[in-house]
Image (cartoon, rainbow, N blue to C red; front, side):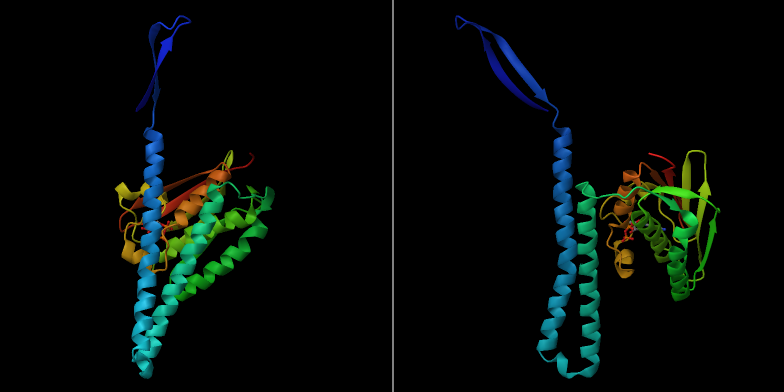
Length: 258
Ligand code: ADP
């Protein structure tokens, strides 16, 4: 708490008392701390791939370039690391747009039957790549209200995570159901699951249960933060049910009208 004091003086310059103003600055402090953490996180996330790109480039210039095998191997790493930086910058820009509420949400009645095939095609490709069974169970004739592209991004982010955090031979599914006031979107997997103490934190920027694993799958640690923003901009909610080593279900509820 911050306290500011000022004397109270009457017309004949007599001291009559003191006014004290108490400011609760805990919120301000917390916001400031979050901002610092964010900058530190971004710097760290950028530093690692940049160091690696620089190191491998130097080694190439120092002579490794003459060896065909090393050349290929190092250039592959440089490409992978620069792709990581690109993904990170893209997600950061996206997040900052969402936070500035610059995001112009289009508000449309989205016919799920027309909206879903594109998502399903992408997921079938994904399923073939990793030999994970994918299945969708979508009620017919439903409509969602909001921005079709942003909502597609929500579903795709959740589905890509489900594939990333599930081993070969596993299963991923998408359900869309009609509820009284909401349309519910459920993304389910039988993958590695999320420890109970991490469940609330996974929606924070850069929080990952296992940093190394997320990096290997190309994750930026920002996907769920973006998802949560978009869902909330649609006046919806997102929650997760999960059991370690059994799997996870992400449940998005979108109000039919807002
Ligand atoms: P990332 O790019 O690391 O995947 P996200 O914001 O999408 O970032 O997710 C944050 C963290 O939540 C992940 O690093 C992972 O630990 C955890 N997570 C997200 N989805 C799942 C899932 N389906 N199963 C298990 N863990 C998950």
